[in-house]
Image 1: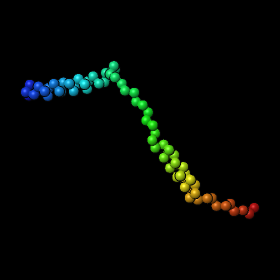
Image 2: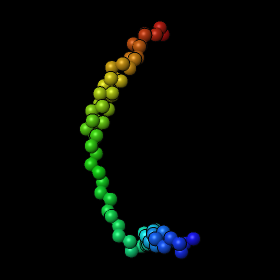
Image 3: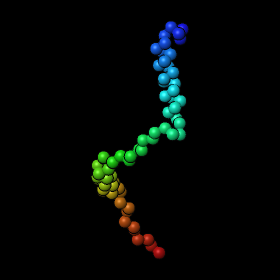
Image 4: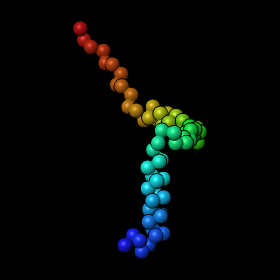
Length: 69
């Protein structure tokens, strides 16, 4: 079956060679650069707004009542 389709055989060998050689220690490595945080200012503003809202709607403690001694 393989000899009937030499193109498939060659393609399979090429794919196998690329797969096996991709994990070699001397393979080229691309340095991963840290991405800039695009939503950082938005997240900080949202956190600040939510914190202020939570402070406003948080129940306040009841005033302490004087106790009889």
